[in-house]
Structure formats: C-alpha cells, structure tokens
Image (cartoon, rainbow, N blue to C red; front, side, top):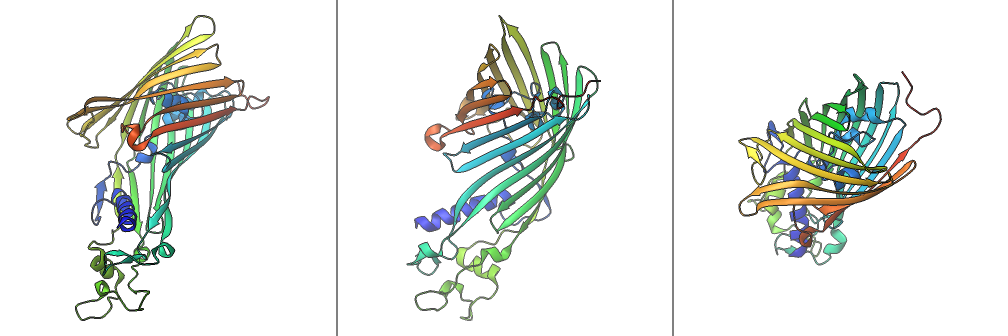
Length: 397
C-alpha cells in the first residue's frame, strides 16, 4: 500500500545510505560519507560551475580553499540557501571571516542539509493483513534527517604571492531518533597568485575522516497490538504462540529484515586542484576564468572519468563583470561519461550584483546530472556583506 511503501522506502533508503547495506561491522570505506558538502557554496562560485579553488579570496574560501581567506581586507559575512529535489532537500550555509593580523585570517563556516517531515509508519501497519490500520493517519509520526558541519579556518600569508591555510572540521549526521554519527578531520591548502593568474590546491580530509555511527534500537519499536481487538498480531507471535518480547526479533519477524547496526566509516582524502585568471577588459570590466579538477582514490568508476581506482572530476567556469557592478556567469559543474549516456555535461549559469559593501548572487542548474523533469532545478541564492568600516581593515605590516 502507498503508506507502507512511502514510509519504509524512505526510511530504508536513508538508513542504507548512511549505514551501508546490512549490518556494519568494523570499518568500511564511505564513498558518500560527506557527500552533502560536495555541492559547494556561494552562488557566484556555483554559477561558474564550482571552478573556484584557485579563485576564492573572500568568505566562501573557508569552504573552497582556506588559504584564499588571506584575500580579505575587511571582515565578511556570507549566507546561501538552496532547494534541491524540487524542494524536498534544503541546504543552508553561513560563514564569517576576518583578518586578525597583517598576515593571518580566521573564519568559521556552518552547513546544514536536511530532509524534513519524513513519514514513519512503524506504528501504522497491520502485518497480518499487509495493509495500513484503519486509523493509520493518527499513528503516523514524522522525523527529520539532517547533516551538520562546522569548519574553523585559518589562513597565513607566507609571502606577497603565497598563502597557506587549514580547516578543522566536525560533522554530525542524524536520522531522527534512529541513528546518528560524528566525524572529525582537517583540510590543508595553498594558494599562489602572480599577476592575473591564480593557482590553488586543497587536500580535503587529509587525516581521513572517521565517522562513527550509533543506532538506537528502541526507535524501531514495532506496534504488535491490534487496536481493534487489543490482541497481538499473529506476525508478532513466536513458534510457541506467545508474543515475541525482543524488539529486534519482533522487527525481523514483521518486516523480514534486521535492525541496522552501528559501525564506523572512513572518508578518504580528496585532492582539489584549481587554476584561474582575472583579466581586465576595456574600461572597468573584467573577465574571470577558472578550471578545477578533483582527484580521488575512492574507487568510483560509474560515469566518472577514471584510471583504475583514481577518479577525476573536472569543472570549468567563466564570468564577465561589467563596470565592477553586474556579473554574468556560466560553467560546467559535472562531466559524466560511460554507457549508455556517452558524454554528458551538467551546465550551471548565474548572475550577481555588487553594491558597495553588499553582493547578491543567483545561480541555477540541474542537480546530479538528472533532468529537471524528474527532480527539478537547483536554485542557489547567496549574499555577502563586507564590513568596510574604520578600524576593521586588515592591519598594515
């Protein structure tokens, strides 16, 4: 029936994605352990296809390349909101960064990705009849699945051209009261600038992120009493005809699957390499070009350019700024190859307005290479505030 299929399929997919198919014992590699952070932040960067590792020099550098935070002259605040999967998934980012000395800059970034109002039908199902209970609507509960991340960033200028940076990262993932996980790691980064050219490199999760999942078995409590006659359902009875007392055994008897178990997952390092250039064009206009590639050893091969277990994810971006105020952008945020799709490019476009101390940016494109007819477009809206006030400017040497 629809209620059962919806509730169990959504819950099952979330648990399987988080904990892996079947019980988890020991450590396993997690190809998608921090995937909620892979989409990127800042509508300007995303409008350029995410080719921003070498170009980032404002508050969003806390995400893209912490070494780029040295580009700040004043404190900055940034925020972005994204709706994905036709509004089913929301993503929010907020960041703040400020120069503290002539060579040092610090920043803090917070991220949240969540799905709300997920249906839990464990107490609304009649296992004997294979259909919802007559009053199932009053027995349905709802929960949220949310991923949180906190980045604390530090950037240090080594010379006029070279800066280095580091992120200290913590994440928390939860699926209602069913399961939650914690993970910690760090990124290291560098950025080099020579005239109009920029080069950047980041090793994400250089220490390898260890995510530790714990499962709350009591959250999987199965309703075994028929509200009509106040008698146990037959599916909840053991071979001796008595009610199965152990909830894990009862859950397996009713749904023919075990309660997932906790475990640990390893998120391997990823190298993000970026290059770019900002050229003056005419009177007060600029042309910006960026080219990035992510290099990972996570073993992904399906639809991703790869050499054995080493995968490559290129990104390309272009932006033209008119009179330092209006900017138009375009890019390729994803390249997929393989049968039967051949070569598939995922584009992204955007625009921005820079007014004194405030910037407002907008971009959109399809999500994960899936056509908009299936899941809708991803709209990204972001804003940045630069606190260009006396006394807040980066100290001189």
